[in-house]
Image 1: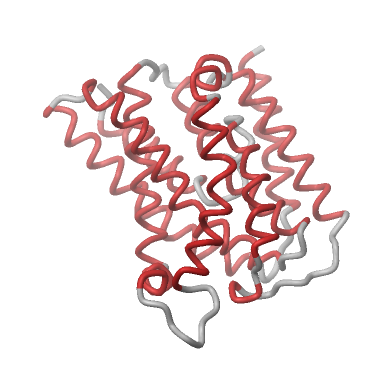
Image 2 (image 1 turned 90 degrees about the vertical axis):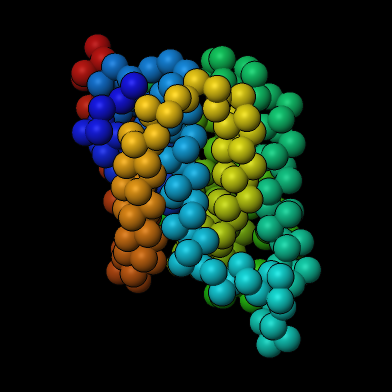
Length: 264
């Protein structure tokens, strides 16, 4: 099983990359490959630390999630309407993921397709920044079912490991008229149902690979993932007040070049 240092490293990779448009899954696969951590235990560890990162968003946006249960009359994105929008965003990738789960796991969770996805996603980010449509939505309360469903369709791209769920949903929202910062914020909220469902599904099939001796390592990775994700979500929204998505696209292309140099 992973040593503590490796758990800290991979927990940090997950927490830092989960909500940025640079692909946490892609980085975890490449990082684990570089340190030689593969196999069933590795997959289980990745699922658990990803769930820990999701808990950071729930903690930061607890009032929004509480509003889905106890709607506020003055808030449009709450109650059944807010749940409906999140359902529309989750549905396409959820259905496609169930239908294509086996081939995706078999053929796409490897360094080569992940590296390609990082490059393709980078080009998508550059495209959305150069071809911005007119902004029609500035806050969560401006979102309608059309944008929610459209973001859900874009989220299907995230089933290709390395493309990035955050990149897919943010660029989708921006193409459909959402302001950049709103696109990022909705991406955080939409991550909770789809990743919680995917993580739960994976854990059901991989939990048997864990033993009691693994709990310290898993706990360490989860703590690092939660803390780093919390900091990144806060910092990312602040950063978008000053920069576009282009630096993240250039970073992705840089990762591709570095990994190809190491790989070849």
